[in-house]
Image (cartoon, rainbow, N blue to C red; front, top):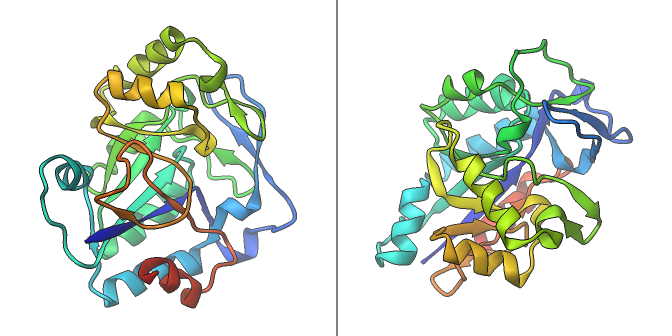
Length: 250
């Protein structure tokens, strides 16, 4: 038995998505970066993908089900999928939440707690603006929330993030700070920022009793997959349904 994990970041209506224009990221922390448009999906495609899962009778997993699968030998339905979002931008509330709720689906959002804005802003399709904690609380009937660091969502170069060059103590303290936020409902679950990690990061997560950690590597997850190196398939904006189904069935 295996399951597929899907990774989304941003959703836009097709008329507002500009494939040649990365989106400036706007968060509470002092942070400057652009979100590549490959990490966007159109609302139309997202709706079609979720409808496709629904019509094929897929079960949307909870994190506790995944933990039990790895640590208690529990079974999961043959058609199981874990839906995840990173960073918690505005489209999570405006687009993802209504679609997921429509199909009675469950999903996971990985939260950079230091990014959460204190006040809501009008939706801006030309920026990737982080939500507020209050907005996330209002989606708790669909989403559960897990650790994506507090202030370590920083990329130094294409192959290195902040956790990889920081001391174990610094990384540990940042993980604790994220988990101290009452919004985090699954404190034993982590997603590596930018999908980057090293052996020291994995060892630290194990020492701190994290149960699951997600990369951005492609592929299914089986019982033989290291639960601290779980695969997540990035869903890009140009993916058609036939390719989407290949990911589910490969």
